[in-house]
Image (cartoon, rainbow, N blue to C red; front, side, top):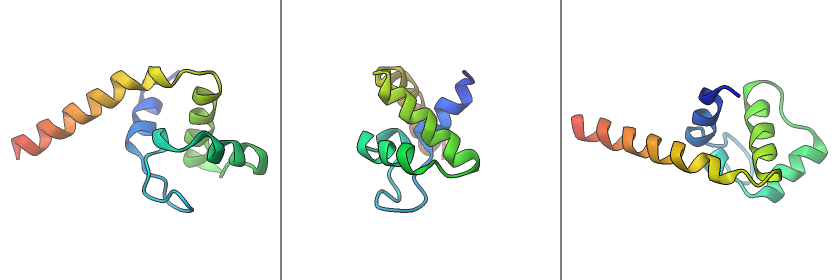
Length: 82
């Protein structure tokens, strides 16, 4: 798996719907299950949502912990540096 995909999952907010603005990594599994039943959107968003669904389905949420920390650390560093 491309690590950049995991970084995008941790950084990208949901652009529409009930959970608009919530990070894809923080979407509830029930919402991802709904997409799985109804069909994931086309393109990059659909691929990210489907990847997050597979992560949650397989109990791999802990995989994102270090990536979340890295993203937070990078954001703090950018804010500190100005």
